[in-house]
Amino acid sequence: VLQGYAAEMDNPLMAHLISPELQNKKDILFGNMEEIYHFHNRIFLRELETYVEYPELVGRCFLDQMEDFQIYEKYCQNKPRSESLWRQFSDSVFFQECQRKLDHKLSLDSYLLKPVQRITKYQLLLKEMLKYSKNCEGAEDLQEALTSILGILKAVNDSMHQIAITGYDGNLNELGKLLMQGSFNVWTDHKKGHTKVKDLARFKPMQRHLFLHEKAVLFCKKREENGEGYEKAPSYSYKHSLNMAAVGITENVKGDAKKFEIWYNAREEVYIIQAPTPEVKATWVNEIRKVLT
Image (tube, rainbow, N blue to C red; front, side):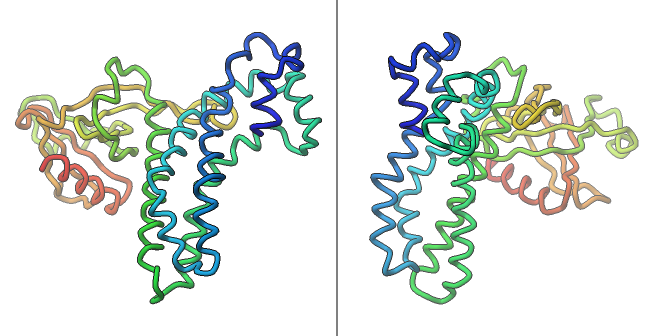
Protein backbone atom coordinates (compact mmCIF):
# COMPACT_ATOMS: atom_id res chain seq x y z
CA VAL A 1 0.00 0.00 0.00
CA LEU A 2 2.81 2.42 0.87
CA GLN A 3 4.75 1.64 -2.28
CA GLY A 4 1.93 0.96 -4.71
CA TYR A 5 -0.42 3.76 -3.65
CA ALA A 6 1.08 6.32 -1.25
CA ALA A 7 4.42 6.67 -3.07
CA GLU A 8 2.63 6.79 -6.42
CA MET A 9 0.80 9.95 -5.30
CA ASP A 10 4.20 11.68 -5.49
CA ASN A 11 5.20 10.04 -8.77
CA PRO A 12 5.40 12.71 -11.53
CA LEU A 13 4.45 10.09 -14.15
CA MET A 14 1.16 9.45 -12.36
CA ALA A 15 0.38 13.11 -11.61
CA HIS A 16 -1.94 13.52 -14.61
CA LEU A 17 -4.28 10.85 -13.19
CA ILE A 18 -4.73 12.59 -9.83
CA SER A 19 -7.54 15.11 -9.58
CA PRO A 20 -6.47 18.48 -8.09
CA GLU A 21 -8.72 18.03 -5.01
CA LEU A 22 -6.84 14.85 -4.16
CA GLN A 23 -3.37 16.33 -4.39
CA ASN A 24 -1.66 17.03 -1.03
CA LYS A 25 -4.21 14.81 0.71
CA LYS A 26 -1.86 11.87 1.15
CA ASP A 27 -1.63 12.33 4.94
CA ILE A 28 -5.39 12.33 5.30
CA LEU A 29 -5.86 9.22 3.19
CA PHE A 30 -3.10 7.09 4.71
CA GLY A 31 -2.88 8.62 8.18
CA ASN A 32 0.27 7.44 9.96
CA MET A 33 0.33 4.05 8.24
CA GLU A 34 3.99 4.53 7.40
CA GLU A 35 4.81 5.00 11.08
CA ILE A 36 2.91 1.78 11.89
CA TYR A 37 4.73 -0.08 9.14
CA HIS A 38 8.19 1.05 10.30
CA PHE A 39 7.42 0.23 13.92
CA HIS A 40 6.52 -3.35 12.97
CA ASN A 41 9.26 -3.79 10.41
CA ARG A 42 12.19 -2.32 12.33
CA ILE A 43 11.25 -2.90 15.94
CA PHE A 44 8.38 -5.21 16.77
CA LEU A 45 9.03 -7.98 14.24
CA ARG A 46 12.71 -8.22 15.31
CA GLU A 47 11.69 -8.34 18.95
CA LEU A 48 9.18 -11.11 18.23
CA GLU A 49 11.81 -13.11 16.35
CA THR A 50 13.99 -13.26 19.43
CA TYR A 51 11.17 -15.17 21.18
CA VAL A 52 10.63 -17.81 18.50
CA GLU A 53 12.09 -20.51 20.80
CA TYR A 54 10.31 -19.17 23.90
CA PRO A 55 6.77 -18.25 22.81
CA GLU A 56 5.51 -18.23 26.41
CA LEU A 57 7.72 -15.20 27.11
CA VAL A 58 6.31 -13.13 24.26
CA GLY A 59 4.21 -11.04 26.70
CA ARG A 60 7.42 -9.22 27.66
CA CYS A 61 7.86 -8.20 24.03
CA PHE A 62 4.45 -6.48 24.04
CA LEU A 63 5.08 -4.80 27.39
CA ASP A 64 8.43 -3.37 26.27
CA GLN A 65 6.79 -1.80 23.21
CA MET A 66 3.46 -0.83 24.74
CA GLU A 67 4.03 2.91 24.34
CA ASP A 68 4.60 2.49 20.61
CA PHE A 69 1.25 0.78 20.22
CA GLN A 70 -0.40 4.12 20.82
CA ILE A 71 0.37 4.99 17.20
CA TYR A 72 -2.75 2.95 16.43
CA GLU A 73 -4.90 5.46 18.29
CA LYS A 74 -3.70 8.19 15.95
CA TYR A 75 -4.47 5.99 12.93
CA CYS A 76 -7.99 5.19 14.11
CA GLN A 77 -8.77 8.81 14.94
CA ASN A 78 -7.90 9.80 11.40
CA LYS A 79 -9.90 6.90 9.90
CA PRO A 80 -13.23 8.77 9.46
CA ARG A 81 -11.46 11.59 7.55
CA SER A 82 -9.67 9.02 5.42
CA GLU A 83 -12.90 7.16 4.67
CA SER A 84 -14.80 10.25 3.64
CA LEU A 85 -11.94 11.23 1.29
CA TRP A 86 -11.90 7.71 -0.15
CA ARG A 87 -15.64 7.82 -0.81
CA GLN A 88 -15.24 11.03 -2.81
CA PHE A 89 -12.47 9.64 -5.01
CA SER A 90 -12.89 5.85 -4.92
CA ASP A 91 -13.68 5.68 -8.64
CA SER A 92 -10.67 7.81 -9.58
CA VAL A 93 -8.58 6.53 -12.50
CA PHE A 94 -5.47 6.94 -10.36
CA PHE A 95 -6.63 4.37 -7.79
CA GLN A 96 -7.80 1.98 -10.50
CA GLU A 97 -4.42 2.19 -12.19
CA CYS A 98 -2.55 1.56 -8.91
CA GLN A 99 -4.76 -1.44 -8.16
CA ARG A 100 -4.21 -2.85 -11.65
CA LYS A 101 -0.42 -2.56 -11.35
CA LEU A 102 -0.44 -4.25 -7.94
CA ASP A 103 -2.78 -6.94 -9.23
CA HIS A 104 -4.86 -6.57 -6.04
CA LYS A 105 -8.25 -8.27 -5.97
CA LEU A 106 -9.50 -5.74 -3.41
CA SER A 107 -9.55 -1.97 -3.62
CA LEU A 108 -7.47 0.30 -1.39
CA ASP A 109 -10.11 0.79 1.33
CA SER A 110 -9.86 -2.91 2.29
CA TYR A 111 -6.17 -2.41 2.99
CA LEU A 112 -6.66 0.85 4.86
CA LEU A 113 -8.75 -1.14 7.31
CA LYS A 114 -5.85 -3.51 8.09
CA PRO A 115 -4.26 -1.53 10.96
CA VAL A 116 -7.65 -1.27 12.69
CA GLN A 117 -8.09 -5.03 12.31
CA ARG A 118 -4.53 -5.70 13.42
CA ILE A 119 -4.78 -3.98 16.77
CA THR A 120 -8.00 -5.88 17.56
CA LYS A 121 -6.36 -9.18 16.54
CA TYR A 122 -3.57 -8.85 19.11
CA GLN A 123 -5.93 -9.19 22.04
CA LEU A 124 -7.38 -12.40 20.52
CA LEU A 125 -3.90 -13.86 20.03
CA LEU A 126 -2.87 -12.98 23.57
CA LYS A 127 -6.08 -14.46 25.02
CA GLU A 128 -5.44 -17.65 23.06
CA MET A 129 -1.82 -17.85 24.27
CA LEU A 130 -2.89 -17.30 27.86
CA LYS A 131 -5.22 -20.27 27.58
CA TYR A 132 -2.21 -22.56 26.99
CA SER A 133 0.19 -20.83 29.36
CA LYS A 134 -1.37 -21.42 32.77
CA ASN A 135 1.26 -21.71 35.53
CA CYS A 136 4.19 -21.36 33.19
CA GLU A 137 6.89 -18.73 33.22
CA GLY A 138 5.70 -15.61 31.42
CA ALA A 139 1.98 -16.08 32.12
CA GLU A 140 1.89 -12.91 34.22
CA ASP A 141 3.50 -10.91 31.44
CA LEU A 142 0.98 -12.28 28.94
CA GLN A 143 -1.86 -11.26 31.23
CA GLU A 144 -0.40 -7.79 31.70
CA ALA A 145 0.16 -7.44 27.94
CA LEU A 146 -3.46 -8.42 27.31
CA THR A 147 -4.70 -5.87 29.86
CA SER A 148 -2.56 -3.17 28.23
CA ILE A 149 -3.77 -3.98 24.72
CA LEU A 150 -7.38 -3.93 25.94
CA GLY A 151 -6.61 -0.52 27.47
CA ILE A 152 -5.37 0.74 24.10
CA LEU A 153 -8.48 -0.65 22.37
CA LYS A 154 -10.67 1.13 24.89
CA ALA A 155 -8.76 4.39 24.32
CA VAL A 156 -9.11 3.95 20.54
CA ASN A 157 -12.84 3.27 20.89
CA ASP A 158 -13.38 6.19 23.29
CA SER A 159 -11.48 8.61 21.07
CA MET A 160 -13.53 7.50 18.03
CA HIS A 161 -16.64 8.60 19.93
CA GLN A 162 -15.01 11.76 21.23
CA ILE A 163 -14.12 13.06 17.76
CA ALA A 164 -17.83 12.78 16.91
CA ILE A 165 -18.83 15.45 19.48
CA THR A 166 -20.30 18.54 17.78
CA GLY A 167 -21.19 21.95 19.18
CA TYR A 168 -18.65 22.14 22.02
CA ASP A 169 -17.02 25.59 21.80
CA GLY A 170 -14.05 24.92 24.05
CA ASN A 171 -11.06 22.70 23.39
CA LEU A 172 -11.79 19.11 24.46
CA ASN A 173 -8.08 18.50 25.02
CA GLU A 174 -8.14 20.96 27.89
CA LEU A 175 -10.55 18.73 29.83
CA GLY A 176 -7.82 16.19 30.54
CA LYS A 177 -7.88 12.53 29.64
CA LEU A 178 -11.13 10.93 28.46
CA LEU A 179 -11.80 8.21 31.05
CA MET A 180 -15.20 6.78 30.11
CA GLN A 181 -18.02 7.28 27.63
CA GLY A 182 -21.45 5.66 27.35
CA SER A 183 -25.21 6.05 26.97
CA PHE A 184 -27.59 6.57 29.91
CA ASN A 185 -31.09 7.56 30.93
CA VAL A 186 -30.93 10.89 32.76
CA TRP A 187 -33.48 12.71 34.93
CA THR A 188 -32.67 16.24 36.10
CA ASP A 189 -33.81 18.53 38.86
CA HIS A 190 -32.96 22.24 38.67
CA LYS A 191 -35.60 23.47 41.09
CA LYS A 192 -33.07 24.15 43.83
CA GLY A 193 -34.68 21.64 46.10
CA HIS A 194 -38.42 22.35 45.63
CA THR A 195 -39.20 19.04 43.96
CA LYS A 196 -38.57 15.89 45.87
CA VAL A 197 -36.30 13.67 43.85
CA LYS A 198 -38.83 10.81 43.90
CA ASP A 199 -41.36 12.97 42.03
CA LEU A 200 -38.85 13.28 39.22
CA ALA A 201 -38.77 9.58 38.58
CA ARG A 202 -42.22 9.81 37.02
CA PHE A 203 -41.04 12.00 34.18
CA LYS A 204 -39.68 10.50 31.02
CA PRO A 205 -35.88 10.34 31.13
CA MET A 206 -33.65 11.96 28.54
CA GLN A 207 -31.27 9.77 26.57
CA ARG A 208 -27.80 11.19 27.04
CA HIS A 209 -24.33 10.11 26.04
CA LEU A 210 -21.89 10.99 28.81
CA PHE A 211 -18.18 11.65 28.38
CA LEU A 212 -16.22 11.61 31.64
CA HIS A 213 -12.97 13.57 31.47
CA GLU A 214 -10.58 14.29 34.33
CA LYS A 215 -11.85 17.87 34.58
CA ALA A 216 -15.45 17.73 33.41
CA VAL A 217 -18.32 15.47 32.52
CA LEU A 218 -20.07 16.25 29.21
CA PHE A 219 -23.72 15.51 28.48
CA CYS A 220 -24.46 15.02 24.77
CA LYS A 221 -27.38 13.89 22.67
CA LYS A 222 -26.66 11.04 20.28
CA ARG A 223 -27.65 11.46 16.65
CA GLU A 224 -27.62 8.41 14.40
CA GLU A 225 -26.45 9.17 10.89
CA ASN A 226 -27.72 7.40 7.81
CA GLY A 227 -25.21 6.06 5.36
CA GLU A 228 -22.47 3.50 4.93
CA GLY A 229 -19.59 2.48 7.14
CA TYR A 230 -18.29 5.38 9.19
CA GLU A 231 -21.05 7.59 7.79
CA LYS A 232 -23.35 5.51 9.93
CA ALA A 233 -21.25 6.33 12.97
CA PRO A 234 -23.27 8.43 15.40
CA SER A 235 -22.46 12.02 16.22
CA TYR A 236 -23.04 13.60 19.61
CA SER A 237 -24.40 17.10 19.94
CA TYR A 238 -23.08 18.78 23.05
CA LYS A 239 -25.73 19.89 25.58
CA HIS A 240 -23.88 20.94 28.74
CA SER A 241 -20.99 20.02 31.00
CA LEU A 242 -20.22 19.96 34.71
CA ASN A 243 -16.86 20.92 36.11
CA MET A 244 -15.58 17.97 38.18
CA ALA A 245 -14.30 20.38 40.83
CA ALA A 246 -17.91 21.18 41.82
CA VAL A 247 -19.41 17.70 41.39
CA GLY A 248 -20.61 15.35 44.11
CA ILE A 249 -21.91 11.81 43.79
CA THR A 250 -24.50 9.66 45.53
CA GLU A 251 -23.65 6.07 44.75
CA ASN A 252 -26.99 4.44 45.50
CA VAL A 253 -30.47 5.56 44.57
CA LYS A 254 -33.19 3.74 46.42
CA GLY A 255 -35.11 1.18 44.43
CA ASP A 256 -32.74 0.79 41.46
CA ALA A 257 -29.33 -0.88 41.45
CA LYS A 258 -28.53 0.73 38.08
CA LYS A 259 -29.00 4.34 39.21
CA PHE A 260 -26.61 6.82 40.77
CA GLU A 261 -26.72 10.57 41.28
CA ILE A 262 -24.38 13.30 40.17
CA TRP A 263 -25.04 16.63 41.83
CA TYR A 264 -23.56 20.03 41.27
CA ASN A 265 -22.85 23.10 43.37
CA ALA A 266 -24.08 21.58 46.62
CA ARG A 267 -27.17 19.95 45.07
CA GLU A 268 -28.30 23.05 43.20
CA GLU A 269 -28.57 20.74 40.19
CA VAL A 270 -29.20 17.01 40.58
CA TYR A 271 -28.84 14.42 37.81
CA ILE A 272 -30.18 10.93 38.33
CA ILE A 273 -28.32 8.64 35.98
CA GLN A 274 -29.46 5.15 35.09
CA ALA A 275 -26.85 2.83 33.60
CA PRO A 276 -27.77 -0.07 31.30
CA THR A 277 -26.51 -2.59 33.90
CA PRO A 278 -25.35 -2.56 37.57
CA GLU A 279 -21.84 -3.46 36.32
CA VAL A 280 -21.66 -0.39 34.09
CA LYS A 281 -22.88 1.72 37.00
CA ALA A 282 -20.18 0.29 39.29
CA THR A 283 -17.42 1.05 36.76
CA TRP A 284 -18.59 4.64 36.34
CA VAL A 285 -19.02 5.24 40.06
CA ASN A 286 -15.47 3.95 40.61
CA GLU A 287 -13.99 6.18 37.92
CA ILE A 288 -15.86 9.24 39.20
CA ARG A 289 -14.77 8.48 42.75
CA LYS A 290 -11.13 8.29 41.57
CA VAL A 291 -11.44 11.72 39.91
CA LEU A 292 -13.08 13.26 42.99
CA THR A 293 -10.47 11.92 45.39
